Image (tube, rainbow, N blue to C red):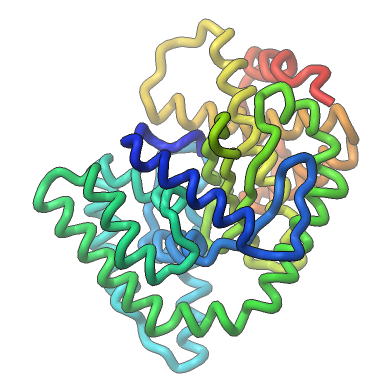
Length: 332
């Protein structure tokens, strides 16, 4: 997903804090070319809750893993747990959030929150951040209802589930970091330099869809990228490829700006840029290593559950492809 919606200055100031926290949060995961892979429990829980609610975007790729809520429910049932308040209220919350575009803030909110604990995020940071955006009584009441249901899920199930899978998830994050540091960061170093993406944090989290979250860096703060951590541990490394797609957005914007494309509504424009970002990542990696490019394509085909070709799954047209080639040419 492209950068987050316009936000008050206070959100960006808080983002400086969360970047600092993330950079120090988890020892043992090394940085490569100014980039590092990090765990962030508050971010992880927030996107777990959003995936349970099941909000859908209008881009070409899903904002949340479509199979995540069902997998969580099946695991809880196997352990004799009934549905939490969040699971029971998910259909109503989803419909209400999708009916009001103001709630698109929820897709990016944890990346602005200066905390690493889910509890603090729900009780202090999230209400404070949302207060500057949610203007009506109805909006605030709906948001409070979501936070109350999310706290129930956190206390009744998620905290215990997170402790149970901590070792396996840390191993998955280590695999993502190895793929990033050993292969991907060296392959796209020129691209990162060209577009001012010389430092940042990659946060792989369960529940996100292949349409991740990208907040561009600045002179005051490194970039932030949140991507899906696949549910299948054997494909954990795919998260590093999902990060490449997010980091292609500056090149995608440059490429699309050079084309005199027909006017498109927001839905069509988002769908095109989303597919173009996937194709851009493949072109970028192909320049460095065709095997790496092929592995990237495999990751995005797996994520889409597609049996056809990569090109047919993520179509963009010849003119867009040519513009993308120009935008990444020589970025090694």
